[in-house]
Length: 156
Length: 97
Image (cartoon, rainbow over the protein chains, first blue to last red):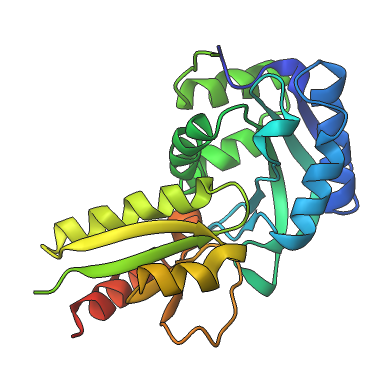
């Protein structure tokens, strides 16, 4: 299985803040049957306590997620934002991040979340790849780019 | 050299702590340092300090500052920003008696 697909991607996403970005991307996952109806609220609650904005070198990102119990099938929804949205900075209660790309992670098993994160770290540290995602306005192309960087997974 | 203990703390899912724990183990190995790495959720940190007696803590999420153990922000393991600094600070701390 691939981690994302065009129907889980929004380009030029208008989101005034992290809550709007999370709600929009969470709705994509919910409407397509990937997550339970508790998922969006769980992500919003978690984001308040454990913020997920990452201050990467060039294009900043956020990785909102929730515990496995809210997930039915693993997938990643991606929002390329029209304007940056303010997220709290992971690990720093006083910091904020102007996220340009939001990767919403819906992961069914914690083991696969770990290997997924290890692969995502490589993407976050690759500015030219993130810029390519940002400048590509086509959802099919973004899905292809992104999936090519992550190993596919087997659903248990 | 005595084996040092590193405790990695994260939010709720343990996933970011696992990524950081692997990174810490790799850094220590590259330096020829023996370390034992454990993980916990931030909410469990006080109890884990009692049972594990870490020499250093790597935190992926804010933790109290009065833990009596040196705390390093481990987010660079995910973002890449400040990663070299974090590595050298960690190595220095692990080499201390």
